[in-house]
Image 1 (cartoon, one colour):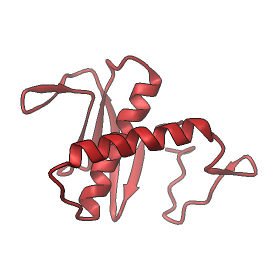
Image 2 (cartoon, rainbow, N blue to C red):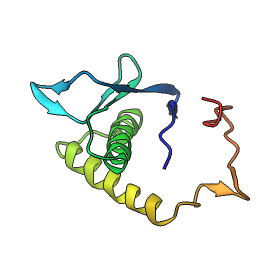
Image 3 (tube, rainbow, N blue to C red):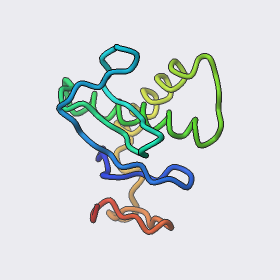
Length: 116
């Protein structure tokens, strides 16, 4: 799985940043953070593996989707976590699912991850 440099969710383009700085939420160290104000998804460079980084990206992406779709739940963290882990496993098990004839599917928004 390739983590893009940006991702469009609804009408917003979120920049993906990897950071060496600790990511703290409520004084708790986190692997990632979706910052809605700056439209940024931050990922820690201190993650154990590429797969953990991918799962963390999907986790934060689901937070952005929940916000865009106005989904509110007391169980948001749990829901985001199980959805991200489930989708990550599907992507790992079906690596060509999003490709067509060895090319990425056309993005109507004009974003092409090959060109950043």
